[in-house]
Length: 468
Ligand SMILES: C=C(O[C@@H]1C=C(C(=O)O)C=C[C@H]1O)C(=O)O
Image (cartoon, rainbow, N blue to C red; front, side, top):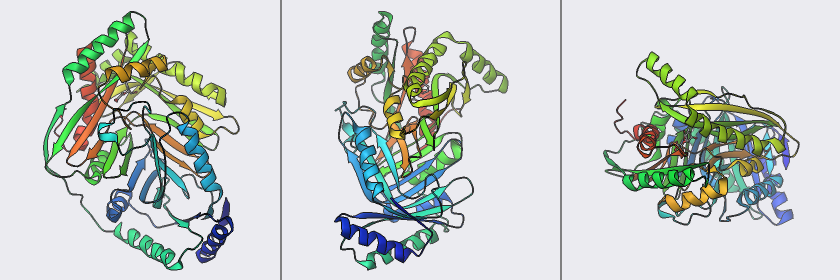
């Protein structure tokens, strides 16, 4: 990797082109500049000419927003085993040969890979998820990075050995156009909501009962079962208006979108899988749920009930244990509080234990993703057995739901969330997914109600009426 401190971009372009000629392979040129304040949603809408190749990411701590337009490069794998390492190695190789023009190695700027790993590479019941590989990622052509108040614009160009200079100048012109578009007020079009329906609700409750029976026999400790809900519209649904809603309605969640081959995976999840900045690691244990109350008093009462509920504490404890075991070998220090706290979201409250660690040298972000996914918050305990039961009992493919989605930059920083409270927009349909942890004393009817609560953020985000 060559990092050039802010310089003449023409000179950087020549450096990249010369290198491509020398190594007989295309070279990535990544140019980062600080720009005047840009509204991320306007940048996304204004990049509509890249419709189908856009993404947005906002973290739940409000420390970073990313918007990507266009795909300069695609990195995907269909491997079932070793997919995390394949992506990691390919990304390292690709960025090692790059030329980066920047003021500093700001996290989330320059070359950055955005995308996700499907929840279960062994599930071949593909349905609506056909176009996604077991790992599907893109390097954007243009990317806005907003860490708090600063605004950076990255332009990624793949320079071929026989590159024509005119296409480079065309890219620079396009970048200016995109920045100008972002200053125009665009109101996203809203399709008309036709209706929503639960997919096979009774079968799902039967599955919960059959898993409870097995848990009671001691076959396993916990299995997370998910189900699907389908929403219909009068015309094609685009991500623009859904993002606009989620952004306003879910300030304390990760808000994300990932347009890919005619579909868009989108959601607002409260759950971080892992974040790595330098050597600092953050992760989250999130499991155990209860409704929000209508008054402050009833809400606090429900919160107390959750904190003291044995079943929920047990579900939560399994997650904490497993995350500790996964991270411990990779950390010099690991801080996990001994009791959970409450995470209160618009529609639901959860038991929550934050995790902070200091990674030992040479620990990569994707190796942590590999160790953590799927945590018992989405899979179960023991992991392999639970995954097997999920394949048997869930009559669907989770695709990217409950899967790691996020980004990694060329310096090894990045963050992956667990893609909950999410759905796939496809044609005039949206497919939503929600699940819950099943333990030996779970009851199908109350688990069903819990999934109904978990559908709410997306139903509201899609413009549906949600009874508060
Ligand atoms: C599976 C979901 O949520 C997960 C399951 C939870 C639970 O069982 O209490 C809580 C938070 C998430 O870890 C979902 O939202 O679909």
